[in-house]
Structures are given as structure tokens and as C-alpha cells.
Image (cartoon, rainbow, N blue to C red; front, side, top):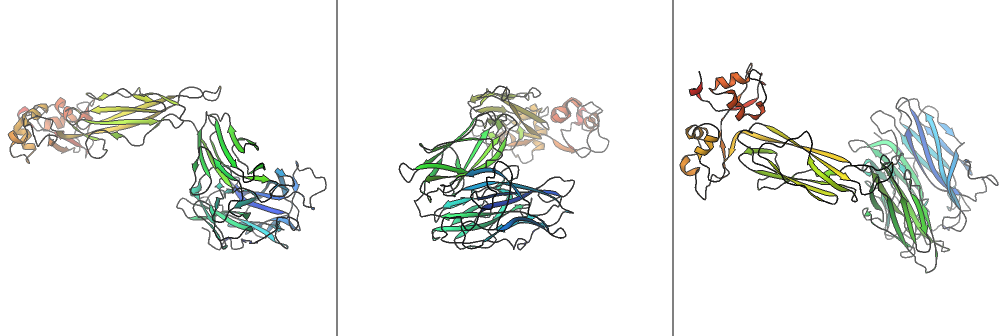
Length: 600
């Protein structure tokens, strides 16, 4: 496990009241993370995402930014690998540019992209990768940048450090907050698997360790700040590992009410931030709308966003109406994916009017059949939700299903083809309504059901609400099985049932039945035809429990207690279908009613 000082070299730079100019540097922001390339060796691929001023004089003249760009600087941007013998350094780092803007934006002119670097380590490590250089844009003097990523390649440790998604420059009002989302390098969301921290505390800034919410205190002054965050992967026990990523980001603290505001439609708010959580299903169109509220009438709106990798969303922005639309017309079955998109709105030409960052956490799950409720809905007055039932007592439960794709319809809710109803039970007609279904099962176990286990398997099928050719065809189904165990040697007295009645049900007499229930002092009055029968629903013993011994078989046990194989099976449903000479499991329990009169 990593120690608290493992990344002590990580710096947190703070600069207050910086003018909005980039003349003194060209570095805007960066993140660094890694992923193990193979479990058969110790190859690791590092990903550095960074942003730089496009007008930097060190770039080649008339350079075509559609080609990889060799990173340059007053101090050459360098990746240094520490801990695997002599430090390995690389100063030939190419930036694959995937986004850029021209002069006139609040960010200035900038380019953004990724650098990938693969290295073969000699063993599981612990290692450190440091991305360093100079100089930070907008900072007075020569301010270096220094990001680190911790690497450990033990088999029981994570094989990656998280990718961090954030805008190159985050605008926020005093007392506001924003998130720094962490995702798997391939895009999987799992916030519970990470731990956020600020290595060196900065007055007025804090981060929630469990969900990456950066909080800006209400007394923080207007100005530009450079903030360094670290995110570690947690192991299965919730302990911090040596798999660490970091981000150097710039924060602009604005005066309250001086920036446009964003509002997303139809999502679920994430904590106290502006972030929204969305859930969709394959086979259905994805459509999200975000509204922008101007602060200046007639101003020109623009949007800035991070990559939504791996979400293939189409984005469009209506600058007049102030509406951002995100869409995916046809996520097909097999294209389930998760991802994050972070963005901000800006008003031009007002250079400082940029909204706070909003992130959309979007999950597109595989469209499946209707989902059964985890718990059965018991409909009788019996306490609890046990599936251990007693002969003579009616029980009932409802089984409920719901299709998570609200446009789908539950088409059927039936017993599966390999399931038959227990004798005397009843399955009410299914009630289907839209994407939900419900069905009620009732049963009073018969006197021959004791000792048996009865499995009921229910199958639900849906009808797709949207059908795409070669994408979403046919029904989807799901199944849920429940097993009812009927207790042997126990019977619940029904209304106006006498002890003689109960004895007759089990092919014995009231004297034998009374002997099995010594707690009853007066069988004629305690179990009888009284209207206010106190014994109604009371449980009577209907036999003795016999523990099967070595060498016992069905006919031998019947003979031992002076009864027949048929009668023994009537008391023990689990013996149904067994041959007379079938061996019994030693130590198991049978219900028996001795009858010496029938013995040869």
C-alpha cells in the first residue's frame, strides 16, 4: 500500500490576482494516468492529456496542427520514470491535437490533446512517473508544472490509475463547487473506487475524498488559482493503493452572479453540485438538453467541453436559444457504455463571463428483460417473509416485475414451461400495465405436502417500445425462481376443525393426536367448534421426528413403525418417487406416526 508521503513531491501552486494574459507561459493544464498493457509482463502505457496556448512562439512556424506536435517549452516538457534503476527520461513527447480554439475566447487561444508513452518496467515496482516543464500560462515569472502518477503492478493491485476529466480552466463563484470526475481509462464509472485529495492544503479550497467535489470557500477572493489534485484507486477493502493519477488545473474565482448559468433537463442531481446523472438503455435514443441563461442581453454564447470518451454522442449548440443538445440516435444492443462529459458556457465578448463547470455522468446500460423485484410481496397476515410454510395454513404472495426501459411493455408473466403448480394452489391472472407486471400465488399446503420443497419459476417477457432494424428485435425475457419448503409433522388448525378431524386427515385417531400434543389439556374444548376458538390457526404436531440411521431405506423405516410405504410417503413428500428399497440419507429427518397394530 502507498504511504501518505509517497507523492510528497507533488506541488500545489497558488497565484492570486493574475491578469488574463498568457505571455509568460504556455502551459494551461494537464492530467496523467496509466494502464497496464498486459498481465504477462510489466508494460505500462501512460496517457498525458494537456492544453497549451496555440500562439506560443516555440511552436514551428506554419505548423499543421492536424499532425502530432512535439512538445516544447522554456524547460522542455519531460516524462521521467523513477524507481526502476537509473531514472528514464523522455523529452520527445508528441501531442496528438484533438481540439483547439482561436483568439477571442476567455481561455485565450489554445490547443489540447493527448500524449501516449509505453514503458517496460523490470518488475511490479513501486514507481513514479513525473511530467514536468515550464511555464504555467498567466503566472508571474517562471512557474514550473509538475504532475506525478504512482505505479504499482502487483497482481492483487489495480492495473490502472484513473483518467481525470476536467476543463482546462474552471470558473466558479465563492461558495461554489464543482467535481473532478475519475473514470477507468476505458471509460467505466465507479466513483466508490477512488479517493480524492489535495496533497498540500490551500486556504479556501477543499475536496470531498469520496466523490471528488471541490469546494471553494465563500471568502475566497476573485482571481486565478492553480490547483493540484491527486486521485488514488482503492482496493477491495477500501484502502488506498499505489495507483495514483493527478491533475494540474486552473481555477478562476468570479464575482457571484457575473456568469451565465446552466440547467440540465431530466437528470438526477449529483450531490450539491450542478452535475447531473443520466441512465439510458440500448435500443432507445439518447437525448439530453442543457439550457444556458445569459447575464447580458444579446451576448454571443459559446460552449467548451471535454471529451465524452467513450460516448459517441452528437453535440449541437444553438447559440441564439442557448440550448445544448446531446444525442445518440441508436445505441444498439451490445453497445452499453458509461462516460462523463464536462462543459461550461461563455458569453462573448465578455472575457470573464464563463459559467461554472457542469458534468453529465451518462450510463447506457444493456437493455434486458423485465427485472423481478428482489423481495416477494407477502399478502397474508403472517409475520415476516418466510418461504417455510405449514400444512393447513393459506399463504399468498405477489411477484412483481418492472422493465427499466420505460418505453418497453411487459407482455407476459407466466410460470416457466418446466414448472408445475403444487396440488391445491392457485395462480391468479397476471396484471400487466405498461412496463410493469404483477401476479399473485396462493396455496394452502395439503396434508401430503409436508417435508416437500416446491420450486416455482416465473418468466417475464417484454415487447420492445422501439424497434431498430438489425439492432433491437424481438422479446427479452428474465426468470425468477422461488422455493417453498413445507414443514413436516406440523399442521395449522383451520376454523371449526376438531382434533378428531385433524387426526382423520393423517389417518390416525384423536387419542394418538392428543398424545402428540401434550400441551392440550382438553381436546374437546380447546380444539372444537367454538366460534371464538382460541386454537384457530394454532399449530399441532402430527407425528414424531425420526433421525435416519445407517442402512435405513424406505420400506425398512415403514416396517419399523408399523406403517406402510404409502403412508410414510404421505407424511414425507420428499420421499415421493423413491423405490421401496431406496437408501435414505443418514442423519436426515422423517415424520412418522407409529402404529404397532399394523405391524406383522
